[in-house]
Figure 1: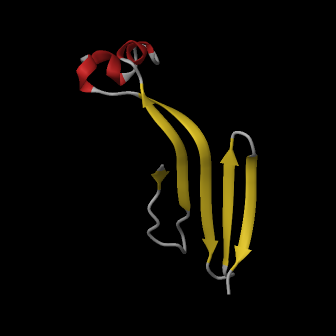
Figure 2: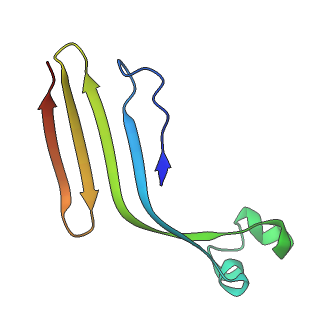
Length: 88
């Protein structure tokens, strides 16, 4: 999971990227992208590339003035769904 830091809920939202990162095998890493990629000029042991399979993306925003939270969620199977909740 990659999760953003929330510094100020008045202006910042929260973001989560959920999935699996698998290291690419050296032969796949050297063939990934094209010759202009930065890693093409580096020795093979100077970097590690990963393939990321995204399983879910979540964005959370707060409207402190209205006392509400909005959650926007995406999954490959469910698409985009948005829910809001009011807080006392």
